[in-house]
Length: 499
Image (tube, rainbow, N blue to C red; front, top):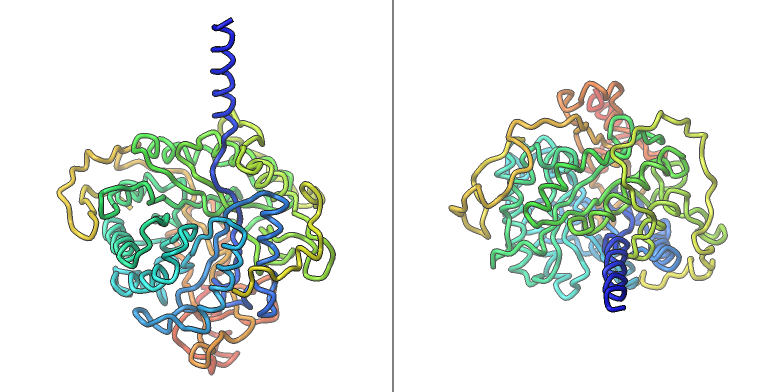
């Protein structure tokens, strides 16, 4: 009898572990990154606050990433926060915190200001750290605020210097009093999961530490899309890309580190994506000892015309909110409120013949539609090679390279595409930004150089394209140029930059 009870207890424990899944799941609430109308009803934008309430109430999601452009927050590197703009961004942050969720600040700048790389020809590490010091001071009493250092660095010449930049930011955040907050560390190559280890990003960033030498609160941030060129610009998913995670998973386990998949997605109703995204998220659930969560791209200011929109249908005065199939079947069901019961994926990498985007599944609600009044509530709205050089907390260190276990050799290569081109990069303004001095500020990001595109990326999407929510608006220029720039000038610059 005793042996039967023991066996039952072991089985229960094993099942419990298998069903645990990742700790956090959610979606990006985009808008402030583009200089669009803020995704808040009180600013005449889409109701991002109601979207988050819906995702929490109906889908039991518990994490939201809130992208914002550095240029939206300050006039120039090292300058104080623009009060009016920060108040608007803070309104979105408060709406997020009101749901009890993890709320990730994402400086959506690709490790750049006006195409100049932070700490490597562009703004100094100290100027970037000053931004984070101000943000950390504002949110130091809110431990559910996560500091996401910057979105998708790419073509960064020296990964060791980039790790030092991240160390400077970590030190500034902690010095400002945000000592209990998670901080996410992005790598080179658009922080792709498939190149995070081979590029040397993992090894370099593993040496970024808190002042006490700990790394528990320092989380690697990775992104991964599943379309034909890994760019996140197509409706169809051709693979679950689990093989792209193998080196990273091994590195994380060997070095007792954790990562978060902060961006992934696909066609919101495409069968190939329903299969492949679900399989990828199941894989992350199965490796929840090293993956703390996953977030889809994207909701917020996006409407249903955007290829990867996870914005709920309905709402905005159009009836109850209903989740698109990809959100309902993959992000919500795989997470299952943290139980991770969406199903265990035991296979390897899955490749799917590209399916027509018309081969889709209709939307519906998960666990029932949100009550319209609840959904429309404004509650919460008011308020490349590795280096052995070590990076210590604010100082250089003699730490041996043996402290970090490499999963691959230094000359390891990956078939993964490093070309996550601008599916959410350099999109246009729809209205002036908040203050007279900032009203003219428009945003530029240069496309990756042709050498960054692998052979399979045959048709590179121009950097300058019209945002699907607002196709009538000319593309912006991410620079310190002012709104006096004429429509003709913008068109000329757009054409030349796209070449």
